[in-house]
Image (tube, rainbow, N blue to C red; front, side):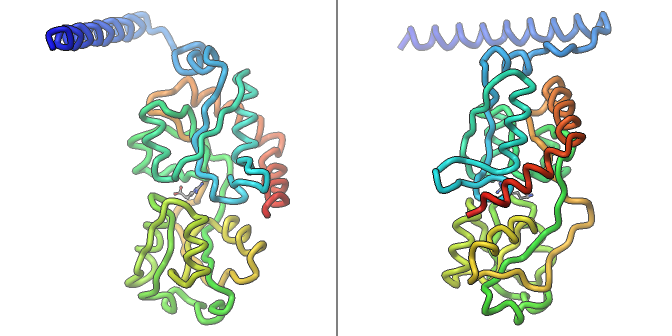
Length: 275
Ligand code: ARG
């Protein structure tokens, strides 16, 4: 009992000392006006550990999905491999639910998130984003038999709409489909099953994802209507807030990846792998 208390007191004192010394460091560099160089803490930590830990939700072909060999593949994964290569470390991938990705960054469980993630203002309050590396539109998926019936957003009013929990599509569907009965699930693969089993009537996802699922499922189709966004919808890499050295390194890699037209190449290859 007493020992436990002593430990706690010691631990508190130690962490306070750490905070103090950290703030002393911060003050020092402020005073000298020293700029952070490429070897500031986060990049350094990743290089020392020898691995870059990626969090993703592999239910989103062609961005990230699980192939027939039970491997996580997709164009986000190929981009992440390039990012790891440029840092000189290997890539480790963690399969998570989309709505748990940002918390995993904050807790340090993963170093980066690539998950077709749109850098919204709300998310920017909790994490930092790289530049946008890919843009797309939104799409709707319905059962093929209903394709002609659901030819306007009004026709979808009051229907059961499936979305991924925590995705921007959850908000878009609520705003744009009147009286939508929203069903939000953790994994897009499960929502697609719900659609096939008539538990929901339509799903809102990014257009390339709608196309990927439809291409392999003749019972699913894309109707002549979609939800829209006011702003351009792009994907960016998310990192823990305050990781400016990592953002700088990632943006440099992304510049190269975009300049060499690797994103287009990875997207084409990922679409060929959808099964
Ligand atoms: N772009 C949307 C968002 O940021 C959906 C992304 C879903 N990604 C995934 N891997 N399931 O909210």
